[in-house]
Image (cartoon, rainbow, N blue to C red; front, top):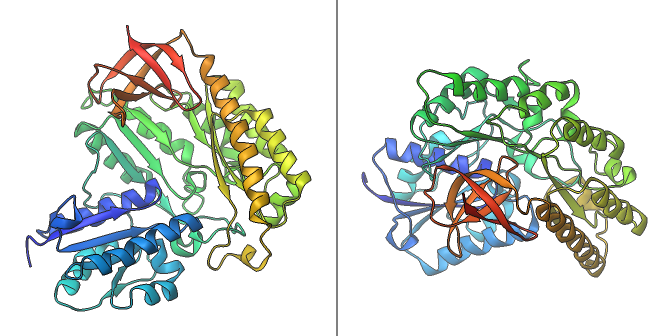
Length: 433
């Protein structure tokens, strides 16, 4: 059974990618071989995301097709679907083993059982830390650290909280230790991820701002000679609270990307209340304005749910007005769909034709905002960290404000200065100087 070949396919967020890296680490420690294609695998682990209906369709179709097209392949399902919708999973793959997102340390046991023709399902919740455990980094230059799991929210539309559970923060000292090891190993970007990074430490008495500052301070460690950047994941506005001033100071540090992901979901206070977001539009705008006053070149990313069941045309207009007002550099749009177990699923969905129209309207606003913002950078010189090859040629780097820049003739993992020569609604182009 040793040296059996395992393929891991990951759907969803950065946190889910990190879960896959932990499963891979667990397997490598136990002499399994990781492969990058289904055709070469004895076992396939499908790490599922269930946050949106289109993603649910993708993962369920993928599981069913693998079962049909590769009858000798042992298929194992992991991720959020395992805890959120076991009834559907049982229906589409009744003879399949499962690994819940809190049971990653059981990966090898489940794989061995599957190879022996047994069905084993490691499910349920735990408080085990995901920091400092064996991991296989899928990108040699980017290291993902899960700083906490679970959340404090009760958002009416969300099913992810049923998979991730209540907040469980990991100690700052352990996170800093893992970050240091990754940087010493050649990583140039540390990604701090969670369902809600702003909730970090609310259960332990530590603070997100303190964590960011301590990881950033590794730049002053005598053992570390290479430069690096820190990207902080999504923050729920309701949980920033009294940490706001210290967070602003943390984001000012030179090796922290000037980028915050701050979902609003709606520009209507009535809809926000129905969504159980527990903050107002005014409170959200205050956070944005405070950040921008201190960090003018900050990039704001936000999320919008189009067509929540109680969203009227007036509510929608308020959302459009908010986007025009705050001008986020990155807007993630999702059409509302019922999710398994979410309280809002008892409400009637608004007509999909209305959702489509509203989504198109916001997409146009989104393009206008980002193109306008990017054009302001034409002719400027930007220092970028080159992180990957471009899908259509060249290489992609990120400015300190986390804006992607396409550039030629550079080495991945290096910092270079470029002059911005072209701006679109999604990226910049630059030339070396």
